[in-house]
Image (cartoon, rainbow, N blue to C red; front, top):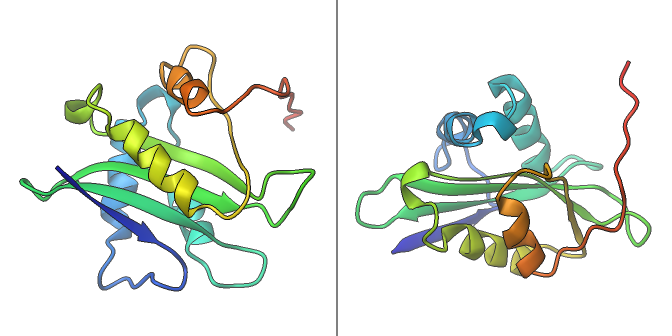
Length: 149
């Protein structure tokens, strides 16, 4: 059984939400699809900022028996509407011990119910989570191309 918490800029308090725990969790459980801790921290700070032009939310899932973090989703608000989805799913991770048990699907459903507007995400072609996103109705509309300096 899991306890889901949605953390928004208006409800975020450092005293009740340990960002370091979330950062360490994401860094560990994103595996090959993850980023360094500093970039994860930047993403969380963006999502939980109440400054104009920033925002988003975080969804956490805790094992109610053990109390440990079992899954996390981080959404950033794009500030766009219509031509670009309003939200981008930056991170989703499920603890190795809970994979294959429907937790990822539950996290995604909570995220989809919480988000105001559309959601975009990037997924590597070899990432098994791709099939979950497709089952939930996500489609591949574009081929992403990037120019990196």
